[in-house]
Length: 448
Image 1 (tube, helix red, strand yellow):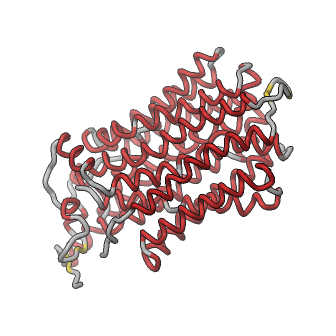
Image 2 (spheres, one colour):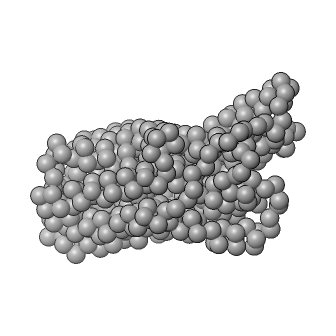
Image 3 (cartoon, helix red, strand yellow):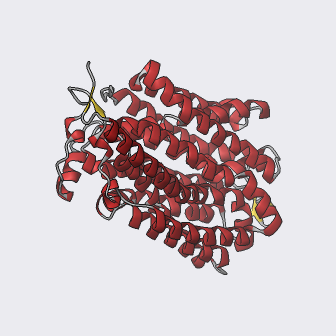
């Protein structure tokens, strides 16, 4: 199929380069806020046993405290899509960073459990609007054909925030305690928010520049005619167009099963599980969780490449969903929930690698809907990830308390291998939804 430039001249190409250079600067600034989003998502798992001991709370209460973040994050995904589409990424990211920074300060300073809840509520409200806004910047500042690259980079760079929340944070907690650590993060979030307000612009027109879509390569037939239209849709029309798009629902299921579940392990119970079942130190346990994040970074680069160049989105969806489910099956059922320590490395690496399909889920989402509704569509799909994470955090906490045998260490409850196996078995059931989603997934490939 023959391709053509809508605008083809040296002057127009220089204009495109200028738009995209500024776009990368704005995107990189927004990603600083996204790094803190990812940090908050994972950080509490590294310190949860010390929080439990200091505040004298049970695993169920701790699970509720963790789940609160994911519940709020999940239910804010639809509003965050609306904010990104209507208010724009600049105001959304700025406001979110300030709210999350104040929440982290309250969490670190809070003398009682209600203050910790308030802090987590504010943190979740703040960071919940950032991710979709970052992707929205990608749809506004770059050609449509470059969005898969932008989505992959968002996932890759986001992993850096998660990496900081593992071994480095574990060392910080050991040295200065969990309270001071979260206070420092809160102050940093406030600074990042101000920087984002100064640098970010919602789209090129706010800088007197044309949209990159004026320069983009197009086919004579498009992947989704609605996504290429410049028609301005009203909010109700955007919502209706997204909800009437069949492809959104398999993508929702895949996000629910492949990302919401990994958050349960890396964002809450992975570190305590490794410390209590394998007798690892906090730093050692955090290093194992780090493997998931490193392999996710690698997977976010390789999986999209293999998808677009060789296997296609449908086949890669099936490979990643079945491979991810197999990895969880090994963790849950091998040796009654305690695989050999050396086997944990390939299991956790495979967790992260198969989660590398996420950028394809996001690209398929934006490809399936009108450009004006991309934020809402991304919010709905992302809702699947975090509602499953929220529900599973609570269920795993309840299962741990149900199987608790009364053992404590330095004020923190110690749970048995059987208790963790029961909790993680519930997670495995949720993992199976990604297989269902991959089977139902029929989105056409987008050709450039």
